[in-house]
Image (cartoon, rainbow, N blue to C red):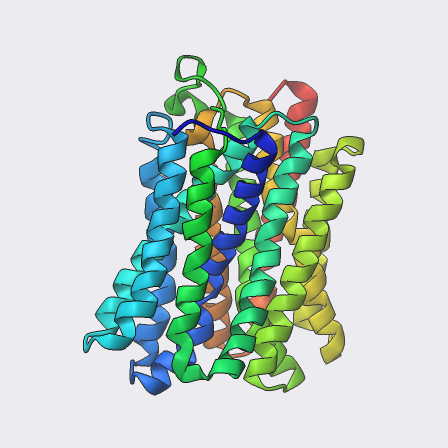
Length: 397
């Protein structure tokens, strides 16, 4: 279909896709207790859904490395929306009406997470390919929409559950299905450029041999681990640290973190053209170490929660800023490069929460110990940034 709109609409469609990615990651966990209580699904099976979500996204990240630069960007991003929409439709229409509830849930999760994995690979290069005076700002704004979506999915879903009753949760799934359906249509109409033509693209085998690329990959891993590690456990930490109800913890913990993440990305979009990106990221990494440490060690409960939120401010900017920095240094990296970075980030997104959970469980469920162990990720980010700065002084990365 011939594009009829301008690139400003392409940016809006990418922003909505980033918002949708937050729904992919954030909606189902809000229903876990309900699945366990109302459908008698064992808690370990419910938890397995989160693992399936991350595994499927990692799988799509990996598979995309071999086809994204060979297939139409438009076809790929529209297909991602279709996966997410169908997944939510299965969740809303089929899960409540079949005897094999868990099997239907697994199908829904795999479809939604497959689309989410493609979002992570495709949205950033589409943004990067749009004509813009400040691509770093555009990238940061798009990724800030993930934070907005993270807050929206928690607040809106909880409000709808109160208004319509928890037994009608499946109608909320249908409500969220509207967004990928409409945005998929939107992507059929907007113009989409290629980041780089295939004839000019650096082969993936050569890219992964460059030391500076490996440093960027490690930074992406650390940023994913630091960001999602805190965000995934923010609710439980708010509940245990403040002694508040689970419902309030679900809203307070993740929303503070996501709100600060959003603010940090918007601020970075405004100042990115006036600062040294590497030095800024180094400072953010150092502050993330400090905030993780404060959350784990400060005895004052309110101060610990504030530290969690501030961690969202410092860790949240690392992902989009690193993508922009790497893209500037490897302008011919192609979508496969973004796919590799998404893969690295998602591996971190899996390992961060896992380490916190395992370390906490080993000492009787003390989340402070888990958060203290997770300091290793921003510490590795500090080391990586220092190596990058040293390398940039010696050679052109």
